[in-house]
Length: 487
Ligand code: AMP
Ligand code: MG
Image (cartoon, rainbow, N blue to C red; front, side, top):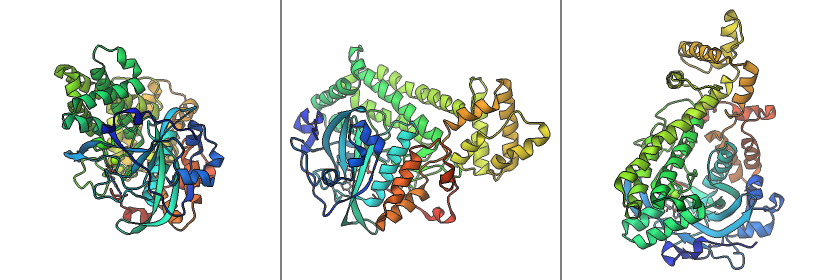
């Protein structure tokens, strides 16, 4: 395996060169065929001993220049100072059909940025990150990817004793908002410029021609962030820890920890048990994304030098988010035209969903079953499966009346609309209880459920009648599940 490493060409201020710390007797847990294909690796070979050795960090390919990057960031709204790759080691990059992608080992041992941590990741969180990265990609949401997970019986202490794992992540770059904040807050403007130039030249070459490329960078990243968060809201994804060190400069969903997919709809749902104030609740993700772009703007100000320009660039977040969310909502509801009143229709829908405690994924999926071409007297029967999702059924009826009228007004054809809606409203998402089931089996040495889930989640829009149970509401025991920052 011939690895390049363009990040290693940057001056030493950006990283520390180091070797991963080996783990005893590593074993293969799971691999992603579609991620492997992106970098031209044979998926069938991922479980081969050589790959397990390399992607655990027990052996480094010749001429690779592994490193951990430094960054800082705002955590839960407060400046946290220096953070950095405390347990992630960049091996290098591979080129393939997916372009040039960096390969990073998460959980590969202590680094100079480990602070109080042990440099390790546990099997539980590695499986969650692996599955969710790949599930998000299959949903068409910008995200880092995950190539594979390996495990070792080495003990890792969290709330309980768990076992170690390494997840190999892939992205064109893992540079974060916090990478810029690091150099800016330390008044190292020369390095700040080098980093901005590296990002522009490597990933946004079209911005080089702008009058103020740094301002153009801020605007582009702001818009990508807004569009990414529109995708999250439209699928009910909650990141859980939207600190600026977890915000990708490429607008990718990054650092999967205590994330969650909305089940019973609650606009204020908090998926991260550690986030008591709900800073990163479902509804707060939208303004927090904007706030994070402000933090990036502050960091870039020494390069941008144009306060009004920066403010205007930040303002574009609202439209980038709003337009993308609006597009996604129209598609989710099977609407092919856009009307002035549609926002009110969407708002009323979310209100009914809230009152009805309706399962987010099931609601949108089953919405495709609603028919317009049905005699008035048969509507209650026809709507029953969808209506039954709502605790407050009259709230649904009121909204459904309005939705049908809207569909009729644009001459919507049931069969066509239903097909289109099933292509954008997933049937299968990574519910916490599904991940938990796969994790518990894996902790007992049976990794088959991880691969099975990956397979199901790679085709989230397919009916997959043989996997019907994976689309069901969470069982009662799932109410006790808590996910926290512990990983
Ligand atoms: P996160 O909340 O996972 O985004 O992590 C915040 C910071 O803590 C990052 O700098 C991580 O690299 C670091 N970190 C998290 N867990 C560990 C660990 N077990 N060992 C070392 N560093 C860690
Ligand atoms: Mg992080």
